[in-house]
Amino acid sequence: MIDITQNPVSTATPKVRFSPRRVWTLAMATVTQLIRMKILAFLVLFCLLAAGAGFAFSVINPEQQLNLLKSVTLGALQIFSIVIGVVSTALLLPKDLEDRTLYTILSKPVPRFDYLLGKLLGVLLLIGGGLIVMDVVLSLVLWLRQTMLLDSYVASLRLENMDSPEALAQVREIVAKQGLTWNLHWAVWAIFLKAAVVTTVALLLSSIASSTLFTIVITFCVTIIGHGESLIREFFFRPYLSSLAGRSAAFVLAALCPDLAQFDIVDSVVNGETVPWGAIYDMTGIAALYMTVYLFVTHLLFVEKEL
Amino acid sequence: MRRKLLAIAVLAIFGAVKLPLEERVTHDLRGRRMLAEPLRLGVGEDLGQAGLAAALGGLRGLAACMFQLRAHVEFTNVNWAKVDSLYKLVTRLQPRQARYWDEASWHMAYNAASYYLYNQELKPALRGQLYHDHVMRGVAILEEGLKFLPDNPRLWQKLGETHWHRTKEFKKAGDAYWESFQHGGLAFTERFAGYAWAQSNDPESWRKGYALLKRLYDKGGPTPGLVEYLKLLEQNLKIPAARRIPDLVPLRKGPDPQEGPVR
Image 1 (tube, one colour):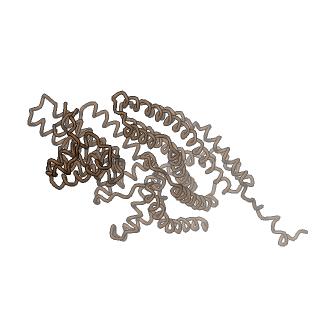
Image 2 (image 1 turned 180 degrees about the vertical axis):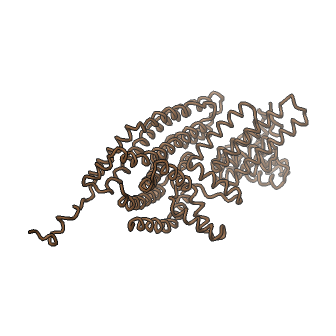
Protein backbone atom coordinates (compact mmCIF):
# COMPACT_ATOMS: atom_id res chain seq x y z
CA MET A 1 0.00 0.00 0.00
CA ILE A 2 1.32 3.37 -0.93
CA ASP A 3 1.25 6.15 1.57
CA ILE A 4 0.24 9.14 -0.51
CA THR A 5 0.96 11.59 2.28
CA GLN A 6 4.61 10.68 1.98
CA ASN A 7 4.66 11.17 -1.77
CA PRO A 8 2.57 14.25 -2.59
CA VAL A 9 4.15 14.67 -6.02
CA SER A 10 2.33 11.66 -7.31
CA THR A 11 -1.10 13.39 -7.04
CA ALA A 12 -0.21 17.06 -7.70
CA THR A 13 -0.10 18.54 -11.20
CA PRO A 14 3.45 18.29 -12.48
CA LYS A 15 5.17 21.71 -12.36
CA VAL A 16 6.14 22.75 -15.89
CA ARG A 17 8.94 25.25 -16.10
CA PHE A 18 9.16 28.25 -18.39
CA SER A 19 10.75 27.28 -21.71
CA PRO A 20 12.10 29.88 -24.16
CA ARG A 21 12.10 27.22 -26.90
CA ARG A 22 8.38 26.56 -26.35
CA VAL A 23 7.68 30.30 -26.41
CA TRP A 24 9.62 30.62 -29.66
CA THR A 25 7.64 27.73 -31.23
CA LEU A 26 4.39 29.40 -30.22
CA ALA A 27 5.65 32.74 -31.57
CA MET A 28 6.54 31.24 -34.94
CA ALA A 29 3.16 29.50 -35.11
CA THR A 30 1.52 32.89 -34.43
CA VAL A 31 3.54 34.54 -37.20
CA THR A 32 2.48 31.79 -39.64
CA GLN A 33 -1.13 32.16 -38.52
CA LEU A 34 -1.05 35.95 -39.07
CA ILE A 35 0.68 35.69 -42.45
CA ARG A 36 -2.06 33.29 -43.55
CA MET A 37 -4.56 36.00 -42.58
CA LYS A 38 -2.96 38.13 -45.36
CA ILE A 39 -2.10 40.83 -42.85
CA LEU A 40 1.13 41.69 -44.65
CA ALA A 41 -0.70 42.96 -47.75
CA PHE A 42 -0.17 46.34 -46.11
CA LEU A 43 3.52 46.04 -47.01
CA VAL A 44 2.74 46.23 -50.74
CA LEU A 45 0.51 49.24 -50.14
CA PHE A 46 3.30 50.88 -48.18
CA CYS A 47 5.84 50.38 -50.95
CA LEU A 48 3.45 51.98 -53.45
CA LEU A 49 2.84 54.86 -51.04
CA ALA A 50 6.57 55.43 -50.49
CA ALA A 51 7.21 55.44 -54.23
CA GLY A 52 4.25 57.77 -54.80
CA ALA A 53 5.22 60.19 -52.05
CA GLY A 54 8.83 60.10 -53.17
CA PHE A 55 8.33 60.92 -56.83
CA ALA A 56 5.05 62.85 -56.94
CA PHE A 57 4.63 66.55 -56.16
CA SER A 58 7.78 67.60 -57.99
CA VAL A 59 6.59 71.22 -58.09
CA ILE A 60 7.47 71.85 -54.48
CA ASN A 61 11.04 72.56 -53.35
CA PRO A 62 13.57 69.82 -52.31
CA GLU A 63 13.17 70.46 -48.61
CA GLN A 64 9.39 70.13 -48.90
CA GLN A 65 9.64 66.99 -51.02
CA LEU A 66 11.96 65.15 -48.63
CA ASN A 67 9.96 66.34 -45.65
CA LEU A 68 6.75 65.18 -47.25
CA LEU A 69 8.21 61.79 -48.13
CA LYS A 70 9.36 61.24 -44.55
CA SER A 71 6.14 62.49 -42.95
CA VAL A 72 3.88 60.41 -45.18
CA THR A 73 5.87 57.19 -44.92
CA LEU A 74 6.61 57.42 -41.20
CA GLY A 75 2.92 58.22 -40.63
CA ALA A 76 2.01 55.12 -42.64
CA LEU A 77 4.44 53.06 -40.54
CA GLN A 78 2.73 54.24 -37.36
CA ILE A 79 -0.70 53.37 -38.71
CA PHE A 80 0.56 49.98 -39.93
CA SER A 81 2.21 49.03 -36.66
CA ILE A 82 -0.62 50.09 -34.36
CA VAL A 83 -3.46 48.72 -36.49
CA ILE A 84 -1.70 45.38 -37.02
CA GLY A 85 -0.77 45.19 -33.34
CA VAL A 86 -4.29 45.87 -32.07
CA VAL A 87 -6.28 43.93 -34.65
CA SER A 88 -4.10 40.83 -34.77
CA THR A 89 -3.84 40.60 -30.97
CA ALA A 90 -7.58 41.08 -30.61
CA LEU A 91 -8.22 38.35 -33.18
CA LEU A 92 -5.74 35.77 -31.91
CA LEU A 93 -7.31 34.58 -28.64
CA PRO A 94 -10.90 34.37 -29.98
CA LYS A 95 -9.63 32.61 -33.12
CA ASP A 96 -7.67 30.08 -31.06
CA LEU A 97 -10.82 29.46 -28.99
CA GLU A 98 -12.98 29.14 -32.09
CA ASP A 99 -10.55 26.76 -33.81
CA ARG A 100 -10.06 24.89 -30.51
CA THR A 101 -6.30 25.34 -30.96
CA LEU A 102 -6.14 26.90 -27.52
CA TYR A 103 -7.50 23.72 -25.87
CA THR A 104 -5.05 21.55 -27.82
CA ILE A 105 -2.14 23.73 -26.70
CA LEU A 106 -3.17 24.13 -23.08
CA SER A 107 -4.04 20.46 -22.68
CA LYS A 108 -0.35 19.77 -23.19
CA PRO A 109 2.11 20.75 -20.46
CA VAL A 110 2.23 24.36 -21.66
CA PRO A 111 1.91 27.02 -18.97
CA ARG A 112 -0.53 29.82 -19.80
CA PHE A 113 2.26 32.36 -19.38
CA ASP A 114 4.26 30.65 -22.17
CA TYR A 115 1.19 30.75 -24.38
CA LEU A 116 0.64 34.48 -23.74
CA LEU A 117 4.29 35.33 -24.22
CA GLY A 118 4.44 33.27 -27.42
CA LYS A 119 1.41 35.08 -28.84
CA LEU A 120 2.81 38.51 -27.92
CA LEU A 121 6.24 37.67 -29.31
CA GLY A 122 4.65 36.41 -32.55
CA VAL A 123 2.76 39.64 -33.10
CA LEU A 124 5.84 41.70 -32.24
CA LEU A 125 7.97 39.65 -34.66
CA LEU A 126 5.46 40.30 -37.40
CA ILE A 127 5.35 44.04 -36.67
CA GLY A 128 9.14 44.21 -36.32
CA GLY A 129 9.72 42.29 -39.57
CA GLY A 130 7.24 44.48 -41.42
CA LEU A 131 8.85 47.64 -40.05
CA ILE A 132 12.32 46.47 -41.09
CA VAL A 133 11.15 45.79 -44.66
CA MET A 134 9.41 49.16 -44.82
CA ASP A 135 12.40 50.94 -43.29
CA VAL A 136 14.63 49.47 -46.00
CA VAL A 137 12.20 50.57 -48.75
CA LEU A 138 11.86 54.05 -47.23
CA SER A 139 15.64 54.43 -46.89
CA LEU A 140 16.17 53.40 -50.49
CA VAL A 141 13.53 55.76 -51.88
CA LEU A 142 14.74 58.62 -49.67
CA TRP A 143 18.37 58.13 -50.71
CA LEU A 144 17.42 58.04 -54.41
CA ARG A 145 15.22 61.11 -54.08
CA GLN A 146 17.83 62.98 -52.06
CA THR A 147 20.54 62.35 -54.67
CA MET A 148 18.29 63.32 -57.58
CA LEU A 149 17.01 66.47 -55.89
CA LEU A 150 20.47 67.67 -54.92
CA ASP A 151 21.80 67.19 -58.44
CA SER A 152 18.86 68.93 -60.10
CA TYR A 153 18.83 71.83 -57.61
CA VAL A 154 22.56 72.45 -57.93
CA ALA A 155 22.22 72.31 -61.73
CA SER A 156 19.38 74.85 -61.69
CA LEU A 157 21.40 77.19 -59.43
CA ARG A 158 24.34 76.94 -61.87
CA LEU A 159 22.04 77.67 -64.79
CA GLU A 160 20.85 80.89 -63.13
CA ASN A 161 24.42 81.84 -62.08
CA MET A 162 23.34 81.71 -58.45
CA ASP A 163 25.72 78.93 -57.43
CA SER A 164 27.65 80.92 -54.86
CA PRO A 165 29.54 78.70 -52.39
CA GLU A 166 27.24 79.94 -49.63
CA ALA A 167 24.07 79.03 -51.59
CA LEU A 168 25.43 75.61 -52.57
CA ALA A 169 26.48 74.90 -49.00
CA GLN A 170 23.01 75.83 -47.76
CA VAL A 171 21.28 73.58 -50.30
CA ARG A 172 23.60 70.70 -49.38
CA GLU A 173 22.97 71.30 -45.69
CA ILE A 174 19.18 71.36 -46.15
CA VAL A 175 19.14 68.23 -48.29
CA ALA A 176 21.53 66.38 -45.93
CA LYS A 177 19.42 67.35 -42.92
CA GLN A 178 16.19 66.24 -44.58
CA GLY A 179 17.73 63.21 -46.31
CA LEU A 180 18.72 59.75 -45.14
CA THR A 181 20.33 59.67 -41.68
CA TRP A 182 20.53 57.18 -38.80
CA ASN A 183 17.88 59.23 -37.05
CA LEU A 184 15.31 57.87 -39.46
CA HIS A 185 15.94 54.33 -38.16
CA TRP A 186 15.62 55.51 -34.57
CA ALA A 187 12.25 57.00 -35.49
CA VAL A 188 11.24 53.56 -36.79
CA TRP A 189 12.49 52.03 -33.52
CA ALA A 190 10.31 54.49 -31.55
CA ILE A 191 7.34 53.52 -33.74
CA PHE A 192 8.03 49.86 -32.94
CA LEU A 193 8.22 50.56 -29.20
CA LYS A 194 4.91 52.41 -29.27
CA ALA A 195 3.29 49.57 -31.22
CA ALA A 196 4.74 47.02 -28.78
CA VAL A 197 3.19 48.83 -25.79
CA VAL A 198 -0.18 49.15 -27.56
CA THR A 199 -0.05 45.45 -28.51
CA THR A 200 0.59 44.47 -24.88
CA VAL A 201 -2.38 46.61 -23.80
CA ALA A 202 -4.48 44.86 -26.46
CA LEU A 203 -3.38 41.47 -25.10
CA LEU A 204 -4.34 42.53 -21.58
CA LEU A 205 -7.78 43.67 -22.73
CA SER A 206 -8.17 40.58 -24.88
CA SER A 207 -7.67 38.38 -21.81
CA ILE A 208 -10.72 39.91 -20.09
CA ALA A 209 -12.83 40.80 -23.12
CA SER A 210 -15.84 38.88 -24.26
CA SER A 211 -15.58 40.00 -27.89
CA THR A 212 -12.99 41.02 -30.46
CA LEU A 213 -14.79 44.29 -31.15
CA PHE A 214 -14.61 45.25 -27.47
CA THR A 215 -10.84 44.70 -27.43
CA ILE A 216 -10.29 46.71 -30.62
CA VAL A 217 -12.49 49.64 -29.59
CA ILE A 218 -11.17 49.91 -26.04
CA THR A 219 -7.53 49.55 -27.16
CA PHE A 220 -7.97 52.37 -29.68
CA CYS A 221 -9.57 54.49 -26.93
CA VAL A 222 -6.57 53.77 -24.66
CA THR A 223 -4.26 54.67 -27.57
CA ILE A 224 -5.97 58.02 -28.09
CA ILE A 225 -6.04 58.81 -24.35
CA GLY A 226 -2.41 57.64 -24.12
CA HIS A 227 -1.36 60.33 -26.58
CA GLY A 228 -2.91 63.01 -24.37
CA GLU A 229 -1.80 61.44 -21.10
CA SER A 230 0.78 64.15 -20.42
CA LEU A 231 -2.03 66.73 -20.31
CA ILE A 232 -4.07 64.51 -17.98
CA ARG A 233 -0.98 64.10 -15.79
CA GLU A 234 -0.59 67.85 -15.69
CA PHE A 235 -4.15 68.17 -14.35
CA PHE A 236 -3.24 65.73 -11.60
CA PHE A 237 0.11 67.25 -10.65
CA ARG A 238 -1.05 70.87 -10.74
CA PRO A 239 -3.91 71.22 -8.24
CA TYR A 240 -4.84 74.78 -9.31
CA LEU A 241 -5.94 73.48 -12.74
CA SER A 242 -8.93 71.44 -11.58
CA SER A 243 -11.19 70.44 -8.69
CA LEU A 244 -10.69 67.38 -6.48
CA ALA A 245 -13.14 65.36 -8.57
CA GLY A 246 -11.32 66.42 -11.74
CA ARG A 247 -7.99 65.48 -10.24
CA SER A 248 -9.30 62.08 -9.14
CA ALA A 249 -10.63 61.37 -12.63
CA ALA A 250 -7.32 62.55 -14.10
CA PHE A 251 -5.42 60.22 -11.75
CA VAL A 252 -7.50 57.19 -12.73
CA LEU A 253 -7.07 57.86 -16.46
CA ALA A 254 -3.37 58.67 -16.20
CA ALA A 255 -2.71 55.64 -14.01
CA LEU A 256 -4.50 53.25 -16.35
CA CYS A 257 -3.14 54.48 -19.70
CA PRO A 258 0.49 54.42 -20.82
CA ASP A 259 1.96 57.74 -21.98
CA LEU A 260 2.32 57.04 -25.69
CA ALA A 261 3.43 60.59 -26.55
CA GLN A 262 6.85 59.65 -25.11
CA PHE A 263 7.50 57.72 -28.31
CA ASP A 264 6.47 60.54 -30.65
CA ILE A 265 9.95 61.53 -31.83
CA VAL A 266 8.91 61.25 -35.49
CA ASP A 267 8.19 64.98 -35.82
CA SER A 268 11.62 65.88 -34.42
CA VAL A 269 13.30 63.42 -36.79
CA VAL A 270 11.37 64.81 -39.76
CA ASN A 271 12.55 68.27 -38.68
CA GLY A 272 16.14 67.02 -38.87
CA GLU A 273 16.91 66.74 -35.14
CA THR A 274 19.60 64.25 -34.07
CA VAL A 275 18.37 61.48 -31.77
CA PRO A 276 20.73 61.14 -28.77
CA TRP A 277 21.47 57.76 -27.16
CA GLY A 278 19.90 58.95 -23.91
CA ALA A 279 16.55 59.39 -25.63
CA ILE A 280 16.75 55.87 -27.06
CA TYR A 281 17.54 54.41 -23.61
CA ASP A 282 14.68 56.38 -22.05
CA MET A 283 12.13 55.22 -24.61
CA THR A 284 13.31 51.60 -24.64
CA GLY A 285 13.39 51.46 -20.83
CA ILE A 286 9.92 52.86 -20.31
CA ALA A 287 8.48 50.63 -23.06
CA ALA A 288 10.08 47.55 -21.44
CA LEU A 289 8.60 48.56 -18.08
CA TYR A 290 5.08 49.02 -19.51
CA MET A 291 5.29 45.69 -21.31
CA THR A 292 6.59 43.77 -18.29
CA VAL A 293 3.89 45.08 -15.96
CA TYR A 294 1.02 44.76 -18.44
CA LEU A 295 2.13 41.24 -19.36
CA PHE A 296 2.29 40.27 -15.69
CA VAL A 297 -1.23 41.63 -15.14
CA THR A 298 -2.41 39.78 -18.26
CA HIS A 299 -0.95 36.58 -16.85
CA LEU A 300 -2.74 37.09 -13.52
CA LEU A 301 -6.04 37.56 -15.33
CA PHE A 302 -5.58 34.84 -17.95
CA VAL A 303 -4.44 32.17 -15.53
CA GLU A 304 -7.83 32.25 -13.78
CA LYS A 305 -9.86 32.63 -16.95
CA GLU A 306 -12.33 29.82 -17.57
CA LEU A 307 -11.94 28.69 -21.15
CA MET B 1 -10.68 35.84 -7.67
CA ARG B 2 -7.58 36.36 -5.57
CA ARG B 3 -5.45 36.81 -8.71
CA LYS B 4 -7.94 39.25 -10.21
CA LEU B 5 -7.70 41.39 -7.09
CA LEU B 6 -3.93 41.10 -7.26
CA ALA B 7 -4.02 42.21 -10.93
CA ILE B 8 -6.09 45.29 -9.99
CA ALA B 9 -3.69 46.06 -7.13
CA VAL B 10 -0.66 45.75 -9.42
CA LEU B 11 -2.27 48.07 -11.98
CA ALA B 12 -3.15 50.63 -9.30
CA ILE B 13 0.31 50.59 -7.70
CA PHE B 14 2.06 50.70 -11.07
CA GLY B 15 -0.26 53.54 -12.15
CA ALA B 16 0.75 55.59 -9.12
CA VAL B 17 4.46 54.78 -9.46
CA LYS B 18 4.67 55.39 -13.20
CA LEU B 19 3.35 58.97 -13.13
CA PRO B 20 6.51 60.62 -11.71
CA LEU B 21 8.62 58.34 -13.91
CA GLU B 22 6.71 59.39 -17.03
CA GLU B 23 7.03 63.01 -15.94
CA ARG B 24 10.82 62.61 -15.70
CA VAL B 25 11.19 60.77 -19.03
CA THR B 26 9.01 63.36 -20.80
CA HIS B 27 11.08 66.15 -19.23
CA ASP B 28 14.33 64.47 -20.38
CA LEU B 29 13.04 63.92 -23.90
CA ARG B 30 11.91 67.55 -24.10
CA GLY B 31 15.31 68.64 -22.88
CA ARG B 32 16.91 66.63 -25.68
CA ARG B 33 14.59 68.33 -28.20
CA MET B 34 12.92 65.02 -29.06
CA LEU B 35 9.48 66.04 -27.83
CA ALA B 36 7.92 69.46 -28.27
CA GLU B 37 7.68 71.67 -25.20
CA PRO B 38 4.08 72.21 -24.10
CA LEU B 39 2.78 75.37 -25.69
CA ARG B 40 1.76 78.18 -23.38
CA LEU B 41 -0.57 80.33 -25.40
CA GLY B 42 -3.60 80.65 -23.19
CA VAL B 43 -6.10 78.05 -22.08
CA GLY B 44 -8.04 77.83 -25.35
CA GLU B 45 -4.95 77.42 -27.46
CA ASP B 46 -3.41 74.94 -24.99
CA LEU B 47 -6.51 72.78 -25.08
CA GLY B 48 -6.66 72.98 -28.87
CA GLN B 49 -3.07 71.83 -29.18
CA ALA B 50 -3.53 69.09 -26.61
CA GLY B 51 -6.72 67.96 -28.32
CA LEU B 52 -4.93 67.77 -31.64
CA ALA B 53 -2.07 65.86 -30.04
CA ALA B 54 -4.42 63.35 -28.47
CA ALA B 55 -6.65 62.94 -31.50
CA LEU B 56 -3.88 62.59 -34.05
CA GLY B 57 -1.32 60.88 -31.87
CA GLY B 58 1.96 60.82 -33.71
CA LEU B 59 0.31 61.67 -37.01
CA ARG B 60 0.35 65.45 -36.71
CA GLY B 61 3.22 65.65 -39.19
CA LEU B 62 1.31 63.56 -41.68
CA ALA B 63 -1.86 65.62 -41.26
CA ALA B 64 0.17 68.83 -41.67
CA CYS B 65 1.65 67.49 -44.92
CA MET B 66 -1.80 66.69 -46.26
CA PHE B 67 -3.10 70.19 -45.48
CA GLN B 68 0.02 71.68 -47.01
CA LEU B 69 -0.69 69.81 -50.25
CA ARG B 70 -4.28 71.09 -50.15
CA ALA B 71 -2.90 74.58 -49.69
CA HIS B 72 -0.61 74.07 -52.69
CA VAL B 73 -3.62 73.11 -54.81
CA GLU B 74 -5.45 76.27 -53.63
CA PHE B 75 -2.31 78.28 -54.45
CA THR B 76 -2.47 77.02 -58.03
CA ASN B 77 -6.18 77.99 -58.02
CA VAL B 78 -5.19 81.47 -56.76
CA ASN B 79 -7.55 81.12 -53.79
CA TRP B 80 -5.58 83.14 -51.24
CA ALA B 81 -8.11 83.04 -48.42
CA LYS B 82 -8.11 79.26 -48.57
CA VAL B 83 -4.31 79.15 -48.75
CA ASP B 84 -4.14 81.29 -45.62
CA SER B 85 -6.68 79.23 -43.68
CA LEU B 86 -5.05 75.92 -44.67
CA TYR B 87 -1.60 77.16 -43.67
CA LYS B 88 -3.09 78.32 -40.37
CA LEU B 89 -4.10 74.71 -39.78
CA VAL B 90 -0.69 73.47 -40.90
CA THR B 91 1.14 75.80 -38.53
CA ARG B 92 -1.21 74.83 -35.70
CA LEU B 93 -0.40 71.17 -36.31
CA GLN B 94 3.36 71.71 -36.58
CA PRO B 95 4.09 74.99 -34.79
CA ARG B 96 7.75 74.09 -34.30
CA GLN B 97 8.54 73.62 -37.98
CA ALA B 98 9.99 76.88 -39.22
CA ARG B 99 9.48 75.84 -42.83
CA TYR B 100 5.68 76.00 -42.54
CA TRP B 101 5.73 79.51 -41.04
CA ASP B 102 8.15 80.58 -43.77
CA GLU B 103 5.98 79.19 -46.56
CA ALA B 104 2.75 80.54 -45.09
CA SER B 105 4.28 83.99 -44.85
CA TRP B 106 5.82 83.80 -48.34
CA HIS B 107 2.42 82.96 -49.88
CA MET B 108 0.81 85.97 -48.24
CA ALA B 109 3.56 88.62 -48.37
CA TYR B 110 4.81 87.78 -51.86
CA ASN B 111 2.40 85.69 -53.93
CA ALA B 112 -0.95 87.02 -52.70
CA ALA B 113 0.32 90.60 -52.28
CA SER B 114 1.80 90.69 -55.82
CA TYR B 115 -1.30 89.07 -57.27
CA TYR B 116 -3.46 91.91 -55.94
CA LEU B 117 -0.93 94.63 -56.78
CA TYR B 118 -0.84 93.68 -60.45
CA ASN B 119 -4.49 92.70 -60.81
CA GLN B 120 -5.76 95.07 -63.55
CA GLU B 121 -9.37 94.26 -62.77
CA LEU B 122 -9.15 96.04 -59.41
CA LYS B 123 -9.25 99.77 -58.78
CA PRO B 124 -5.77 101.18 -58.02
CA ALA B 125 -6.64 102.19 -54.45
CA LEU B 126 -8.00 98.74 -53.71
CA ARG B 127 -4.94 97.10 -55.26
CA GLY B 128 -2.67 99.08 -52.97
CA GLN B 129 -4.79 98.31 -49.92
CA LEU B 130 -4.93 94.58 -50.66
CA TYR B 131 -1.20 94.53 -51.36
CA HIS B 132 -0.54 96.20 -48.01
CA ASP B 133 -2.95 93.91 -46.13
CA HIS B 134 -1.37 90.74 -47.48
CA VAL B 135 2.16 91.95 -46.82
CA MET B 136 1.18 92.71 -43.24
CA ARG B 137 -0.45 89.29 -42.98
CA GLY B 138 2.86 87.74 -44.06
CA VAL B 139 4.69 89.75 -41.40
CA ALA B 140 2.12 88.73 -38.78
CA ILE B 141 2.60 85.04 -39.66
CA LEU B 142 6.37 85.31 -39.20
CA GLU B 143 5.95 87.18 -35.92
CA GLU B 144 3.56 84.51 -34.71
CA GLY B 145 6.03 81.80 -35.73
CA LEU B 146 8.75 83.58 -33.77
CA LYS B 147 6.65 83.24 -30.63
CA PHE B 148 7.05 79.48 -31.00
CA LEU B 149 10.61 79.56 -32.32
CA PRO B 150 12.26 82.68 -30.92
CA ASP B 151 15.76 81.35 -31.63
CA ASN B 152 15.17 80.33 -35.23
CA PRO B 153 17.58 82.17 -37.58
CA ARG B 154 15.58 81.27 -40.67
CA LEU B 155 12.41 82.97 -39.45
CA TRP B 156 14.34 86.07 -38.37
CA GLN B 157 16.02 86.16 -41.79
CA LYS B 158 12.67 85.86 -43.58
CA LEU B 159 11.24 88.64 -41.41
CA GLY B 160 14.21 90.79 -42.37
CA GLU B 161 13.68 90.02 -46.06
CA THR B 162 9.96 90.78 -45.86
CA HIS B 163 10.58 94.12 -44.16
CA TRP B 164 13.34 94.95 -46.67
CA HIS B 165 11.53 93.96 -49.87
CA ARG B 166 7.88 94.47 -48.98
CA THR B 167 7.15 96.83 -46.09
CA LYS B 168 10.31 98.92 -46.67
CA GLU B 169 10.73 99.24 -42.90
CA PHE B 170 14.50 99.11 -42.94
CA LYS B 171 15.02 99.56 -39.23
CA LYS B 172 12.88 96.50 -38.54
CA ALA B 173 14.61 94.67 -41.39
CA GLY B 174 18.02 95.43 -39.88
CA ASP B 175 16.92 94.36 -36.42
CA ALA B 176 15.52 91.08 -37.81
CA TYR B 177 18.67 90.31 -39.85
CA TRP B 178 20.77 91.05 -36.77
CA GLU B 179 18.65 88.67 -34.66
CA SER B 180 19.10 86.03 -37.37
CA PHE B 181 22.87 86.44 -37.26
CA GLN B 182 22.87 86.40 -33.45
CA HIS B 183 21.01 83.07 -33.49
CA GLY B 184 23.46 81.38 -35.85
CA GLY B 185 22.07 82.58 -39.19
CA LEU B 186 24.04 82.64 -42.42
CA ALA B 187 27.03 84.99 -42.68
CA PHE B 188 25.33 87.40 -45.07
CA THR B 189 22.65 88.27 -42.49
CA GLU B 190 25.26 90.22 -40.52
CA ARG B 191 26.11 92.36 -43.57
CA PHE B 192 22.47 92.76 -44.49
CA ALA B 193 21.66 94.02 -40.99
CA GLY B 194 24.11 96.83 -41.66
CA TYR B 195 22.74 97.49 -45.16
CA ALA B 196 19.17 97.66 -43.85
CA TRP B 197 20.08 99.98 -40.96
CA ALA B 198 21.89 102.19 -43.46
CA GLN B 199 18.63 102.69 -45.38
CA SER B 200 16.48 103.44 -42.34
CA ASN B 201 15.44 106.90 -41.14
CA ASP B 202 16.69 106.29 -37.65
CA PRO B 203 20.04 107.92 -36.65
CA GLU B 204 20.57 105.34 -33.91
CA SER B 205 20.28 102.56 -36.53
CA TRP B 206 22.74 104.47 -38.77
CA ARG B 207 25.28 104.47 -35.96
CA LYS B 208 24.80 100.75 -35.35
CA GLY B 209 25.02 100.08 -39.08
CA TYR B 210 28.14 102.20 -39.48
CA ALA B 211 29.92 100.46 -36.58
CA LEU B 212 29.03 97.07 -38.01
CA LEU B 213 29.92 97.78 -41.66
CA LYS B 214 33.12 99.60 -40.74
CA ARG B 215 34.22 96.62 -38.69
CA LEU B 216 33.50 94.29 -41.63
CA TYR B 217 35.32 96.69 -44.00
CA ASP B 218 38.38 96.78 -41.75
CA LYS B 219 38.39 92.96 -41.64
CA GLY B 220 39.08 93.06 -45.38
CA GLY B 221 37.41 91.84 -48.59
CA PRO B 222 34.81 94.63 -48.95
CA THR B 223 32.01 93.82 -51.39
CA PRO B 224 30.41 96.50 -53.63
CA GLY B 225 27.35 96.48 -51.38
CA LEU B 226 29.43 97.01 -48.27
CA VAL B 227 31.22 99.98 -49.84
CA GLU B 228 27.97 101.48 -51.16
CA TYR B 229 26.15 101.40 -47.82
CA LEU B 230 29.21 102.49 -45.88
CA LYS B 231 29.43 105.52 -48.17
CA LEU B 232 25.74 106.21 -47.58
CA LEU B 233 26.24 106.02 -43.81
CA GLU B 234 29.32 108.25 -43.94
CA GLN B 235 27.18 110.82 -45.69
CA ASN B 236 24.21 110.46 -43.32
CA LEU B 237 26.37 110.56 -40.18
CA LYS B 238 28.57 113.35 -41.59
CA ILE B 239 31.76 111.44 -40.95
CA PRO B 240 34.80 113.72 -41.40
CA ALA B 241 36.54 113.29 -44.78
CA ALA B 242 39.75 112.11 -43.11
CA ARG B 243 37.97 109.14 -41.53
CA ARG B 244 36.02 108.12 -44.64
CA ILE B 245 36.98 105.05 -46.64
CA PRO B 246 38.98 105.75 -49.80
CA ASP B 247 36.82 103.62 -52.16
CA LEU B 248 34.53 105.14 -54.77
CA VAL B 249 30.80 104.44 -54.68
CA PRO B 250 30.32 101.39 -56.93
CA LEU B 251 27.99 101.59 -59.91
CA ARG B 252 24.69 99.86 -59.09
CA LYS B 253 23.76 97.10 -61.52
CA GLY B 254 20.45 96.03 -60.01
CA PRO B 255 17.38 98.11 -59.11
CA ASP B 256 17.49 100.46 -56.16
CA PRO B 257 16.28 98.53 -53.10
CA GLN B 258 14.30 101.60 -52.01
CA GLU B 259 12.04 101.15 -55.02
CA GLY B 260 8.86 99.17 -54.72
CA PRO B 261 8.33 95.62 -56.01
CA VAL B 262 9.51 95.14 -59.59
CA ARG B 263 7.20 93.48 -62.01
